[in-house]
Length: 390
Ligand code: SF4
Image 1 (tube, rainbow, N blue to C red):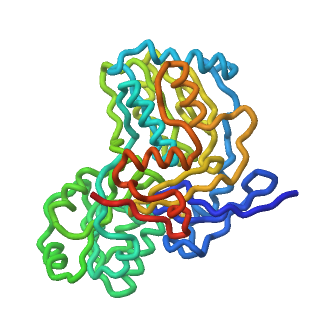
Image 2 (cartoon, rainbow, N blue to C red):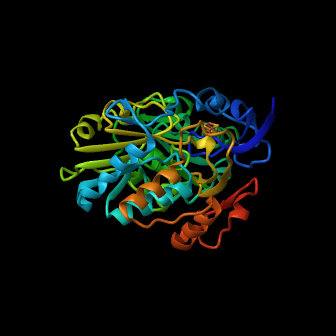
Image 3 (cartoon, rainbow, N blue to C red):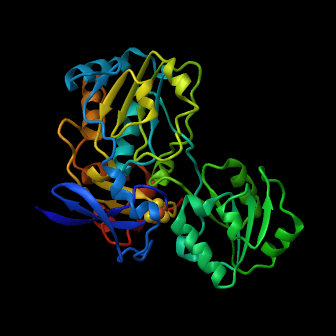
């Protein structure tokens, strides 16, 4: 029996807590907190603490065509039929839970196809306050249920409250509302009530916190002109945003889709609203590590490595790039997403970068200015490195 601890990043929310995955004989069997990361300082929320229970769950380990088991050669030939479609007829729906390097390859794949690319509930926006600065704010306005979505970011807000900060809340009934001192329950964000405005105006270090995929909250927050924490609820949503990948839009012209399914799965089926439309397409290819509602509508299913079987970097909502380390072995018969993209690009006569995660990172950094001048080696430090904001 072989046991080891692998320090990596939680696969769930955009806080980007570091954790130690306990690995026995190539399989994750437990989670221990990491005390070396300033993001979480040895703490994890219950989702992070129980990550090992779900990481290997409901794995897809064989390719399928129309619900029937198949082999890699047949499915890849069939998937290469994407090349029959014109640029405007293809959509790539990517996941905010893959590494920066894999996202870069997906983005290059879409670019070389001329296809549109997007993320379900994708967001945009750069924060002007860091995680640790939140606890020193004296008035914090929270818009929407930010504390349940990103629990350890929520911890910093609670710390600020314990330090004497006033916590204001606008949004639907939620956990964040319960924690706030001053609350306005509403389904829409309108102008600030005079009481809220006065508190923010008289504050020395005010801050507003909202979700990157909540455009109404963003509009209200931007109008305030104060420091803002723009939260991404998926572990590499910010990385995707830095590559210019925004919310998915499925126009009528689309006939074929290549979807990188979002795993590990969450309680809410993020694809529910799109299933009918995706089902009506001529060709739907789904690359996934685990069972998803997309399996019911997929023409082709490609079994790919899960996040804890991958190596690379991820960017938390603050813009902190951190190292995600490979903890578990990939099951036999499963390929990495990088291998799938390279093979598919080869069959379709497209050129996308290749190499080790470090080499792909170097290509990414040379093209995406936020990552420029930051080396892979620097990212390996426990505290990671912040992207260069424009
Ligand atoms: S706060 Fe987010 S990143 Fe941290 S352990 Fe919980 S789910 Fe994971």
